[in-house]
Image (tube, rainbow, N blue to C red):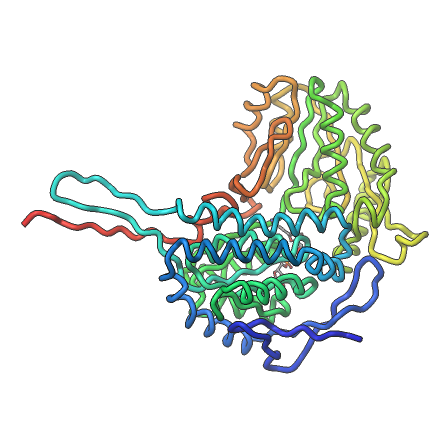
Length: 474
Ligand code: NAD
């Protein structure tokens, strides 16, 4: 029986004002799933009104009280991990290990911001005798959070936890393809003690619910994760309203491997970029730049392991039908431009994986840097490789992209790795597997967007500094 999922507004389910519902679908089987409320500007209006009413009292709560409630939300996510996994799997087809990682990390966002919030505060500015000057870090009010379908719960929590910690109320608009985990999170957050209206969720399409949210006069800030074209559109909406916006957009991130690197670990990192969420990760390192003397050996090892990856166990399907078509389109264009894959290069057309939107892990080797497949974000299990000779060429190739989200460098010479880290234009650089986690600020250079999520930096994104200066002389 098809279940209908409503919006979550003011601490309770809300039937869509226009009465419509959108169908969900399991990409692992292409079978129909539940239905979800089709949001409209009327629903956005109700959600923003609830958030506006609830926000001042939430911001006035003692910091330790907000922290306590965030800890309780983290507890609730952990306690309901299996239900989250079931909901998320039903519309993404993700594999078990991927789901477990994402749900654990979602809880960890709330845990982290609950933990650091009491240590987050303004500063005093010493201007000399007879003055007292200090800053307060105040919330914006209502924040709109618009998220995509690739890591639905995780990306929602990445924005929600710091935004709520800082004393904002949030209206979230998850992807119309994967809204169930965000709706369930809001329900659990209410049960965990988050006051009604502080977190509201309106499901629906970007045009019908997303744009009205960003354009709403009471929304004071927007956080968007998704594609470059929609990011550009929302940046225009925000510019018109003169409100700040965080944009987490795509990437075509390099994985640079020098001949003196630990090749076992570098190969494992490349295979992981193919398999993790089937490459549907904005920070996936999909351009493999390998020093010429080891290039062919590294590519052969990756291809051999890629061919052994099992669909449904090691990696999942393309989450939307449009994304599945888009990846196949990239293959067709690459073929027309003369590129021949070393492995993969198509969908699974037999066996159980043919039932779902599974794409074969694919490697294109020695790709000319100006081909579409080398420049455009594919957002699937696809790597392109390019050989280089020497550090200068490695750096030039790494930066030869309109994007700048992350880069990974592998070298036996750590100083060389650090020189690359200094020269690469990207928001996060990992040298020899250095961890990039919730504690480390994340965000783009160039077309990958602006603003920072994660770390203390995200708390600064969701607050505005106010200076108070007092003259003490009589
Ligand atoms: P998308 O930009 O179409 O959708 C993302 C979100 O924006 C969804 O909630 C969608 O409903 C909403 N949206 C769409 N059109 C809108 C509009 N006109 N106004 C307001 N909201 C709108 O992206 P997608 O196709 O769902 O995701 C795939 C792309 O997103 C990938 O190509 C990838 O580059 C990018 N992405 C980036 C990150 C990141 O963290 N940087 C994460 C995931 C996806």
